[in-house]
Image (cartoon, rainbow, N blue to C red; front, side):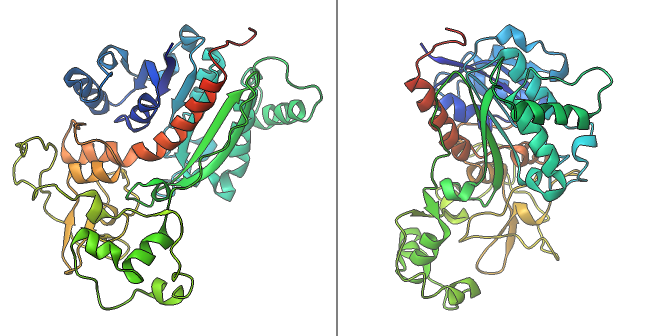
Length: 397
């Protein structure tokens, strides 16, 4: 019997594609942004990905605050990336006082649906020292989701009750989860982008999971070795090796002589290989969609683009339109160009069959908010494998 899941804050579908690929059948996909919902619906209608025909009727557009998640009691997984503006390094850092904070809604979904496991991802900014208490608070709430905030109770008192419960013996009465957390760099898992995200993964305490985060499969050291020691990279991509060694290579010359066992980080050049030259119109180029040239790219201090032969810098959504530097390619000849939507999708490891709705800035916002598909897949497949080992027993069985 297939695993069932629900996902909050689905966005353009990066995490949903990953969990789908790991074997989870979505019972509900929740998202408030209309363009993102259109992206999900249109791809479902087109059957862009095998087995996703039922997605179209699973998309729920609107605020999750009014959703009764007890209707999904017994699902195997709750997943989602709550809006990260309160904790983003590029935002205003409102944290727990920010009304945009949707982590409490994710916790409520876990409490009401009581899944066997959950996956929550967010920006690395959540790990900043200024948010350390809130991160700990969130982990404790996810560990004991039934210990809710009382009417009129301040969050500090609620935190104290959670801490007291956590340090009590015995403490495993009621619904509880074993929660682990880790910051992962997408480039270390084959994504052509240096993008750090924090993942919180929990298994219900009746499951003896023995789970840990999957180990990295790729490394910067391996890429530098291929580029500057063996030269294999340049032969593989059919490009001429530059004559001047970067400073990082000069500083680490001795340590780079022996290639690591990991695969090399993937670069923008490799990510966009095979794509035709961007179009000047919105018309698709054969089977390639969302590949329109966007004029106006220019470097300026703090926004210098991403080198073509390195992983991309972190793609960002931005408050007003699209940030300049992170969404530009810096070519070896000194020219610059904005990534097309399709190129950005490849950087985020979305399949080419996945089309994005909305104007360029809105589609890029969807991509900037997304978790890279291949990064999420590494976590989701590992969680699915553990759940498979433990069958489909429900709590209390």
